[in-house]
Length: 155
Image (cartoon, rainbow, N blue to C red; front, side, top):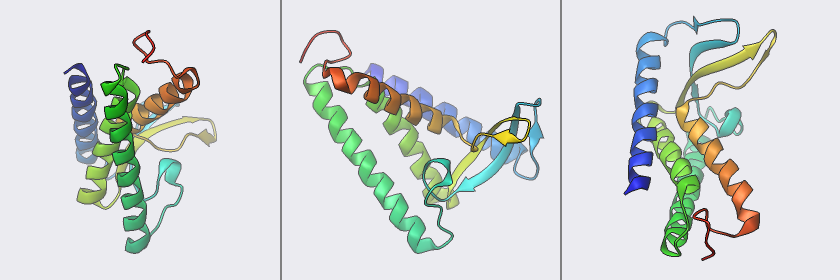
Protein backbone atom coordinates (compact mmCIF):
# COMPACT_ATOMS: atom_id res chain seq x y z
CA UNK A 1 0.00 0.00 0.00
CA UNK A 2 2.82 2.42 0.83
CA UNK A 3 4.22 2.09 -2.69
CA UNK A 4 0.86 2.94 -4.20
CA UNK A 5 0.64 6.03 -1.98
CA UNK A 6 4.15 7.14 -2.98
CA UNK A 7 3.35 6.60 -6.66
CA UNK A 8 0.05 8.47 -6.32
CA UNK A 9 1.73 11.44 -4.61
CA UNK A 10 4.41 11.69 -7.32
CA UNK A 11 1.80 11.31 -10.05
CA UNK A 12 -0.53 13.95 -8.59
CA UNK A 13 2.27 16.46 -7.97
CA UNK A 14 3.61 15.94 -11.49
CA UNK A 15 0.20 16.28 -13.13
CA UNK A 16 -0.65 19.37 -11.04
CA UNK A 17 2.64 21.12 -11.79
CA UNK A 18 2.34 20.35 -15.50
CA UNK A 19 -1.20 21.74 -15.49
CA UNK A 20 0.05 24.89 -13.73
CA UNK A 21 2.91 25.27 -16.20
CA UNK A 22 0.57 24.86 -19.18
CA UNK A 23 -1.90 27.32 -17.65
CA UNK A 24 0.51 30.08 -16.64
CA UNK A 25 3.74 29.60 -18.58
CA UNK A 26 2.79 28.28 -22.00
CA UNK A 27 2.99 31.68 -23.74
CA UNK A 28 6.18 32.98 -22.13
CA UNK A 29 8.99 31.96 -19.80
CA UNK A 30 8.45 32.93 -16.17
CA UNK A 31 11.75 33.85 -14.55
CA UNK A 32 11.92 33.32 -10.78
CA UNK A 33 15.56 34.37 -10.34
CA UNK A 34 18.86 34.10 -12.23
CA UNK A 35 18.97 30.33 -11.63
CA UNK A 36 15.36 29.19 -11.97
CA UNK A 37 12.71 29.83 -14.57
CA UNK A 38 9.68 28.06 -15.97
CA UNK A 39 9.50 27.64 -19.72
CA UNK A 40 7.14 25.08 -21.27
CA UNK A 41 8.58 22.83 -23.97
CA UNK A 42 7.25 19.60 -25.42
CA UNK A 43 9.90 16.87 -25.47
CA UNK A 44 9.23 14.28 -28.17
CA UNK A 45 12.41 12.32 -27.41
CA UNK A 46 13.80 10.69 -24.30
CA UNK A 47 15.81 12.24 -21.48
CA UNK A 48 17.35 15.60 -22.33
CA UNK A 49 15.57 15.51 -25.71
CA UNK A 50 17.81 12.77 -27.08
CA UNK A 51 16.18 10.87 -29.94
CA UNK A 52 13.86 13.83 -30.46
CA UNK A 53 11.81 13.10 -33.57
CA UNK A 54 9.66 15.63 -35.38
CA UNK A 55 8.10 12.80 -37.39
CA UNK A 56 5.18 10.94 -35.88
CA UNK A 57 6.65 7.53 -36.76
CA UNK A 58 9.85 8.20 -34.79
CA UNK A 59 7.85 9.63 -31.92
CA UNK A 60 5.57 6.57 -31.76
CA UNK A 61 8.55 4.17 -31.91
CA UNK A 62 10.30 6.02 -29.05
CA UNK A 63 7.06 6.12 -27.06
CA UNK A 64 6.51 2.38 -27.53
CA UNK A 65 10.09 1.69 -26.44
CA UNK A 66 9.52 3.76 -23.29
CA UNK A 67 6.27 1.88 -22.61
CA UNK A 68 8.09 -1.45 -22.96
CA UNK A 69 10.87 -0.36 -20.60
CA UNK A 70 8.21 0.80 -18.13
CA UNK A 71 6.54 -2.61 -18.36
CA UNK A 72 9.90 -4.29 -17.71
CA UNK A 73 10.41 -2.11 -14.63
CA UNK A 74 6.91 -3.13 -13.46
CA UNK A 75 7.87 -6.80 -13.81
CA UNK A 76 11.15 -6.14 -11.96
CA UNK A 77 9.21 -4.38 -9.18
CA UNK A 78 6.80 -7.29 -8.88
CA UNK A 79 9.68 -9.76 -8.69
CA UNK A 80 11.49 -7.73 -6.02
CA UNK A 81 8.32 -7.13 -4.02
CA UNK A 82 7.56 -10.87 -4.06
CA UNK A 83 10.97 -11.62 -2.60
CA UNK A 84 10.51 -9.10 0.18
CA UNK A 85 12.65 -6.31 -1.20
CA UNK A 86 11.76 -2.66 -1.17
CA UNK A 87 10.58 -1.39 -4.53
CA UNK A 88 10.82 2.33 -3.84
CA UNK A 89 13.25 2.82 -6.73
CA UNK A 90 10.96 1.03 -9.15
CA UNK A 91 7.96 2.92 -7.79
CA UNK A 92 9.64 6.26 -8.51
CA UNK A 93 10.51 5.18 -12.06
CA UNK A 94 7.06 3.77 -12.81
CA UNK A 95 5.15 6.78 -11.43
CA UNK A 96 7.27 9.23 -13.41
CA UNK A 97 7.22 7.18 -16.56
CA UNK A 98 3.46 6.66 -16.54
CA UNK A 99 2.85 10.38 -16.09
CA UNK A 100 5.21 11.18 -18.96
CA UNK A 101 3.54 8.53 -21.15
CA UNK A 102 0.22 10.24 -20.51
CA UNK A 103 1.76 13.49 -21.78
CA UNK A 104 2.91 11.72 -24.91
CA UNK A 105 -0.62 10.47 -25.58
CA UNK A 106 -2.43 13.70 -24.68
CA UNK A 107 -0.03 16.44 -25.84
CA UNK A 108 2.16 14.71 -28.42
CA UNK A 109 5.22 15.21 -26.22
CA UNK A 110 6.30 15.32 -22.59
CA UNK A 111 5.54 18.63 -20.87
CA UNK A 112 8.85 19.90 -19.51
CA UNK A 113 8.99 23.29 -17.80
CA UNK A 114 11.67 23.61 -15.09
CA UNK A 115 14.79 25.37 -16.37
CA UNK A 116 17.89 25.66 -14.20
CA UNK A 117 20.67 27.91 -15.46
CA UNK A 118 23.81 29.71 -14.43
CA UNK A 119 25.10 32.47 -16.65
CA UNK A 120 25.16 31.12 -20.20
CA UNK A 121 24.93 27.47 -19.07
CA UNK A 122 21.63 25.72 -18.56
CA UNK A 123 20.41 22.26 -17.63
CA UNK A 124 17.95 20.63 -20.04
CA UNK A 125 14.35 21.52 -19.23
CA UNK A 126 12.67 18.90 -17.04
CA UNK A 127 9.61 18.14 -14.89
CA UNK A 128 8.77 16.45 -11.57
CA UNK A 129 8.31 13.04 -13.22
CA UNK A 130 11.83 13.31 -14.62
CA UNK A 131 13.16 13.98 -11.12
CA UNK A 132 11.38 10.87 -9.82
CA UNK A 133 12.74 8.75 -12.68
CA UNK A 134 16.32 9.97 -12.14
CA UNK A 135 16.05 9.37 -8.38
CA UNK A 136 14.68 5.87 -9.00
CA UNK A 137 17.40 4.99 -11.48
CA UNK A 138 20.01 6.37 -9.08
CA UNK A 139 18.67 4.20 -6.27
CA UNK A 140 18.67 1.13 -8.52
CA UNK A 141 22.24 1.77 -9.63
CA UNK A 142 23.34 2.30 -6.05
CA UNK A 143 21.64 -0.78 -4.57
CA UNK A 144 21.88 -3.23 -7.48
CA UNK A 145 25.57 -4.15 -6.96
CA UNK A 146 24.77 -5.20 -3.40
CA UNK A 147 21.89 -7.44 -4.56
CA UNK A 148 20.34 -6.99 -1.14
CA UNK A 149 16.79 -5.82 -0.64
CA UNK A 150 16.53 -2.26 0.63
CA UNK A 151 14.68 -3.61 3.66
CA UNK A 152 18.01 -4.67 5.13
CA UNK A 153 17.60 -8.43 4.95
CA UNK A 154 18.68 -10.66 2.10
CA UNK A 155 16.00 -12.14 -0.11
